[in-house]
Length: 288
Ligand SMILES: [Zn+2]
Image (cartoon, rainbow, N blue to C red):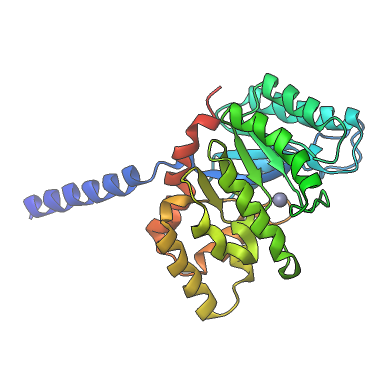
């Protein structure tokens, strides 16, 4: 009897150990977190700074975040742009194992090139662009010229771009033009925001391997069982190693984004791969 108990105990320990060792939670990452510099005069307790985002991502057992500076928003003065990017930079420098920052740039700003240079010299490894919010028409050469100047610089330094990639149905030509940009710059590591939105079927047309797909928003739009399972089949075809978790906090809470991902019907190990294993391919963003 005692022998049997011992045997059971050994078996239990092995199972426990193998379950724990298969998931390294310290690499769990949210790659789409918006933060803003806290106001100088505190008006209430609800601010959307990095410290608060940490509480939100810890609520689903994640440990790290790519925090996005507000400076990419169009209607900001040069002073505000520098303040927001500096805030994100200070935050990533103070907790480099937890936070990595995306320098925000609006292509429409007169100082876009100057700020891109400044962010590179500060040590930013990632940039965030939102060409749609910039009102940019990527099918026009005048717009593209503004973009090329910045991407050339980012490409030379082999840095990363988190790109907003979810255009409405009426703007599919913008998604196609974005695809050309992604293909033109294989030295940039692309994080395709929001799963490429409704145009996710363009993903196999990316002609290099230097990209990851961030999974926010699109799963929330998949309402029917058929759509959900078609998306899972598609993900498996692309390769599950390409997908990384992003929430879009505070627009969408991490718990809601994760639930929408689980509801697609991915296996538990696929979910863990997206949350914990795949982010290891981007560990370099956290080492400073
Ligand atoms: Zn966002």
